[in-house]
Length: 466
Image (cartoon, rainbow, N blue to C red; front, side, top):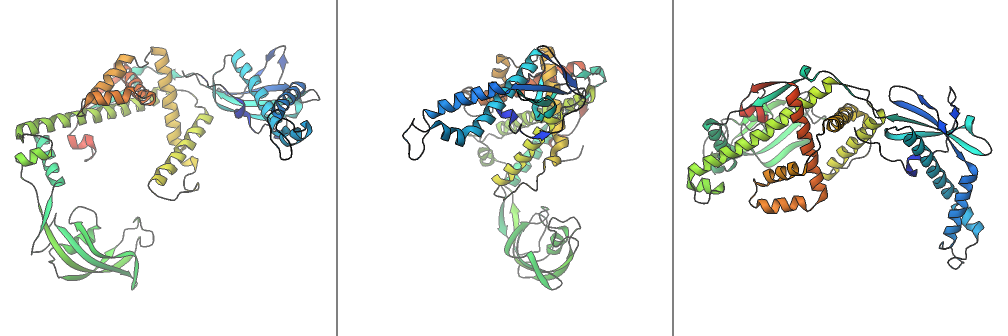
């Protein structure tokens, strides 16, 4: 299990809120503090802070500040103490109170060997406050104990793919299409032709936003245009015009036209047919085979496919293992960790869109949208931490090195890639996290019920439904 992080003064910002006292009351026995169990993982504890200690520390800090504080009209170190206390007293008082509360809470946590999950919620408590001390209550969650069912009840699926000459041939065709060129032809449009058009679309006689284009090019049959638009150009030659109706789907992304019918006027400017490069020595050279040997090209393509398949199959297996772990692990999940993760995911989504140049405010991404995803991530994190601790599955230095060496082999200069990883602690930490997950996956595969499923290359890579 992961250890609870230490709680500094910042964890208790805003403790001055006054609320009615909790019931039932808390009881203190000597130096020990009674901890109330609210639920399996939620706890509540009373904290008291002597006011004289707070005041003494406030005075000490303000006097220390007096030596260096600058104010207009006074030399450094000569500002009257009363002015310093008036300007900074409240801020220092809050800082000291937060520190004292943090110290008191950490003592309770340490004395009772609690592993706190997230940040406690601290509120003032009138019932335990008096002239000599300030009373507070801290409500918090602890990390849960995880109960596992028999791992043999966990079902894990491993994908198996056989890479043969057929897959190599299909890949070569894809590589040829990626290097396609076009030449102008004097005939009607066919599938795979590149078509350049002018078009104008109207709804109720009015051109709608995005409904007009000049010199617009697309490949017929590529699925970039709506089916009715694609069908309209088939058989048309350069210089021909056509008018046709187009029905926008109800779920069309453009809400202003979704579910409506537009009348389009279409003019064909140019028709170009595709020219695929021949599979020869020059083609092989474009793939990095210096001498153009086609046999070497096929061997390298097959090796690349096998690496790609192995990586994707490994990821699919890992996903299946994670699903299985969620099924066999039973425990209450700390809400505070879920909330923190949901906020993180929401901020991450905003940042991703902003990096793409979009203006995003807080509204489109409420954290609630990410609660389910956040809970899954938190649960898996707790499960993995528990298994790593119980079964000594931490990443070993030799495993980290082997992982980096394997990744580096796919680059032109493996030694340079390895140096890049080992020169940065954060990069090494990322690799360590991957290796740790691999260790957990391998452990589960040894203890779960594993079945193999043979799938095609297209199914595994997501180009075809399984």
